[in-house]
Amino acid sequence: MSLSMAMASRIRFILGCRQLSTLPTYLKIGKVYTNYEAICLASSSFGLYANQRSFSTNVLWQQYKGDSKRKIYAEFDLPQRGADEGQILEIVRMHYTETGITKDDPVVQRLFTGIKEGKRAALAESITLVESTHPKKKAQAQVLLTELLEDAHKSRRRSIKGISSFRIGLSGPPGAGKSTFIEAFGKYLTGQQHKVAVLAVDPSSNTTGGSLLGDKTRMPELSRDMNAYIRPSPSGGTLGGVTRCTNDAVVLCEGAGYDIILIETIGVGQSEYAVADMVDMFVLLIPPAGGDELQGIKKGIVEVADLVVINKSDGDLVPASKRIQAEYISALKFVRPKSNYWTCSVSRISSLTKEGIPELWQKMKEFCEVMSKYGEIEHRRQKQHKVWMWNHIRHSILQLFKEHPAISKHIAYLEHMVAKGAMTPGYAADILLQKFSKNFDDNK
Image (cartoon, rainbow, N blue to C red; front, side, top):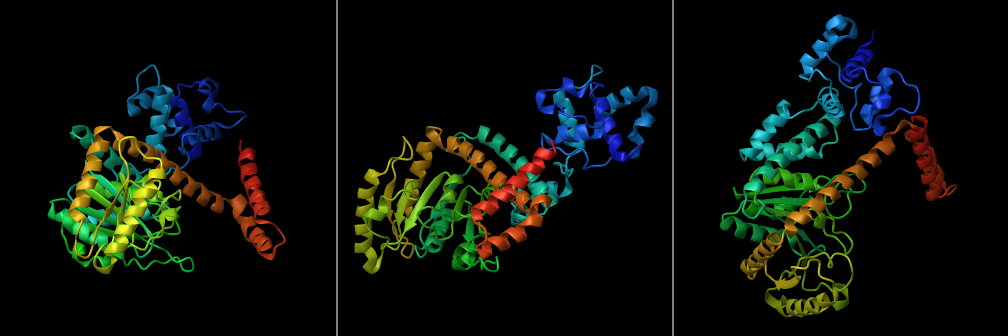
């Protein structure tokens, strides 16, 4: 008997020799399958892959003989009455997952321990791990993140306010002085005994895919501060001014003990504000010559801001910054408040002279206290978890679509036809989607 058939027999025996038709509807088989195919189909409904991990040959069906039931129950510590569906799925999840990565994985254990001890090298390696596209490393990253989230959940329950960190997103047009502001603001926070993590996103080249990662060079003082950690990352073509893994990096930084997380986006326009789905407070940073009042009432990035900050309010730019402040205060009267408990305000600061930064931090602390009091921060984070899940699904589905055998062999030809003008892009997309859908229908 082949190893794969032995696996199927092993799992099927755990079922207590019940027929598949007695399982819940999501496990029922609509056509005749071998035991092995049926188990694989049932398992794949839950993201489990029974055919991906082997086990020692001493568990082959023939070797169980008369006392096989006793051996099965003894091995998995199951009651004599047989396993229910929940136990069956847990057994499959533990022993037949696609990668076999668990929290006992040496890499996961080493990084988890290093992060909890506050080691910067472990944090840097962990962020690199979550940015990887290698299947095994992706699995290790997700297990590591799960462990950190569980640990953070226990810590939050012991916290009076219910949150152990404050996530602040910074966005704005190019030239607004975001990096200069972060250095001045970050140094002020570390002086207040806070640990600050800065996740800076640099744009990636559409031609080469590379990124300069130069944000850290614009923060020389903060880079040398032992209570600060700066991690530049390439955008990788992701829209919204952030990277695909920025939210995962936030979890890692919090696990390492950083209580203030600053996320600096690339210079964005009025419709790119994905960072708002990752943070507790979204701050829009604008220069004194940021436009007229009409710009302020445009829907989009201003509408989701919790605080508008006018930077470079020093020297000859003070009159211009005061005028812009007045215009934005007037414009925000026509914008529906984002929360019932907080109204967006407009502040002026100078990153060069540090004027206004202490007052700005007091405003941010007031926001944190008010929103924590009414449970708004926890509510936002719960909604953000759902957004993160769908972001990962979109990215994974796109990768699956491009790499699927039924699709990849047609992509080059259809792209050529579209480039020649012999076919519309929409029609070519419909062809690929139909082939993708038909492939799944044929496998039912």
